[in-house]
Length: 340
Image (cartoon, rainbow, N blue to C red; front, side, top):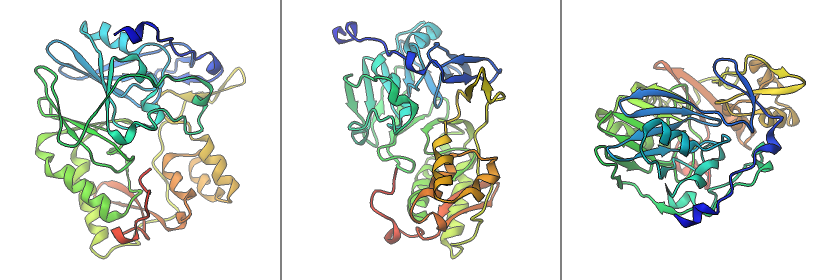
């Protein structure tokens, strides 16, 4: 398309001192292009650049990328060289910045209408230092839509738990649910009411017979976690609200093997940078929780910073962890705008 001929590549030089370590211990500045693929099913790859994982799905005559990450370089070119097929379409699970920076590389991006207004929001992160183009063509998707990738259809689900407008994509052929950050196999993080979360999980469970694998932003998990989360949320609703621990060891993403290099802090490529969470917790006197993580912030601790964070609990049962608020059990207790 003509508009792409004039599109300037993102300049990452402002982030040269932001160092990233990959799974093999290799450390590079963020302004150096890096891509690594892992084949996870026929015609299906997990792509690591920086930010959460992207997923590449190959059809008969083209491939489609799910989420674009925040890495330097052209993820589109990498995917086209990997498959030998054009990759002109991209599917967005949700509009958090670690999934959206490289959307501009594609001829068209499919997303929920709710994600359009904030299709780029640095959320106060280091990514505020770079200019991210947002004037790319967009097609809106809705619950029940179908992505027609020749030889491999994807069914669209709009189930919102982690973020307003979140989409999931069901690949019946390879029995995979590409679920963004809505479903993890490490923990379930209910930031709405438990009743609302239970309805969401019940919906994912309603077509559970059609997928065995969860391809999430933070990795690949057995879909059995959907069943475990369903049973645990159901248990809480059956008169067990308040069970679980307030002072709990949270799920933590992996850390870089090397904390510093030449006086510069080193971050892991996939793990989110949660330094700001640790700083915010210290500022409001929540240091005791940080002792559980050696002073490191983590995603689960975001809930501690909400006005009702004292009612936060983690319940471990059914071989899973569920985080929830004991004052948000039923819908009438749910606050407007609580889906982040």
